[in-house]
Length: 570
Ligand code: PEP
Ligand code: MG
Image 1 (tube, rainbow, N blue to C red):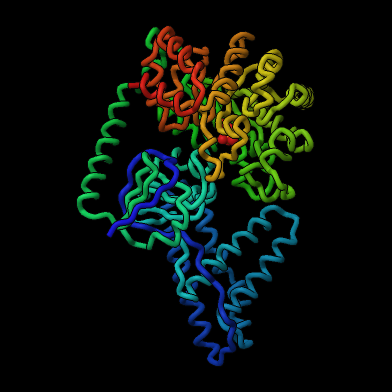
Image 2 (image 1 turned 60 degrees about the vertical axis):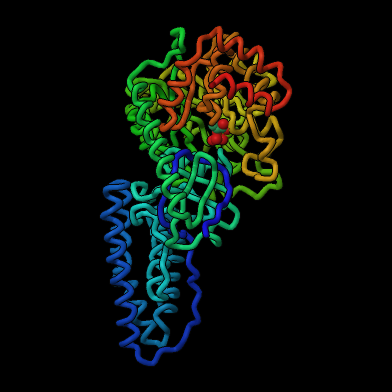
């Protein structure tokens, strides 16, 4: 008998497949004395060989699915696991009576600590590799499966507590039919990643890892936020039909590929893309984006083990600028804190992280670190149309301080003989209630605005974007949020600066007429939403949009607003 679970519809599409539970295995063991050291060493050797074979297969697959560089990291693991120093150490411990598990843990921990104590970055990276290898070989010895998202059978439904950015670096997206998580809302990073990978996803399904069993057939309905466990034949047939209809609709959108983004009366708009790393830039261009409206630079920091250097950042930003061939690229400076953790920055735990020491607040307080990023951005600006965007601004003082630092960096780079765009634009991510209220003041000093509705909705409604209990308040259909958005656009337009939107609301076709009515210029959406958004824009004339705006802005509740927008969209 089937059962149905409800969650958050985080990434559109319907996936049908078999559950692969991505739960960390329990690798605890009872150490025991061994008498037959030769047999124990052979047991270790056997586990090591299996580990190496699996890792080799993983590296081969990753070459195709992820890239040569990432695959090389896996090949490096094999060499390290076979390192004579490590192997000898383990054999000696077994000769001394230790079981293979204990010999492995003790010896590898000794090497790990030794690497950790070294100053050189290369050696510290080795320490992390040693820890990975230990997990892999220990799992072999204990006969446990380590979940490896880089090698999955076709049609896998990945069920995981949370989908982290590091997991997605290796995920084998060709074979993933759907994702189910236990935490995360529509604008959580798991959701953003799933949409970027175009994998149907339902998030925040309570106890999904306990309720969905490995190998059972599951339907992930990312359109309605349903997960159907063990469906019957009739259901499978129905959902297959819906999946086909979804694919057909997607195919029909191809008519908008290569077309300009214009309203029904020919007003030109910019359709940009949100990206998380330099490799995504190509995907954005392939999906027909005209610009990058938001490069979330914190992913560069989250994927690293320590602060990326100026050269590393420069390379990443330059790569995006070059890929976009002169089209605008808005790069947001480090947006750390809130739900974005960067462990090596060692930020203290706070009672209220979303209102705490984060984003521009952290950056201005660590100006030397911030200048590394600003210098890298300036240097990369010599290779394309890079614009700098400051997150979480609440007052004009913050913008002034950032601009002063940019000027300082320019002076330094000029003395050092570097090229950069002298007129680089510094704009603001409009995502706090404070910024929305002083949009007129900020518009005088910002080069552009980009509305971050993910946070703006949360801050305006005082509703945490990741908290299910208050998610009914987290909606941009509330008049409070619509007025905040309107105030930002209208004041930006009045001041003559570019106003865009990079929050998820930019891809909501119901909002499109309002944004057109207020005069918004740039829509920045995830790659798979580019064509859909171009279509939505093409359906509205300014006068129709104005008439709807006048009606909707009189309404008092979110439900009334949504109903009126839905009615108009029909
Ligand atoms: C936003 O807040 O709307 C936004 C685009 O940024 P992020 O989702 O990274 O906070
Ligand atoms: Mg934000």
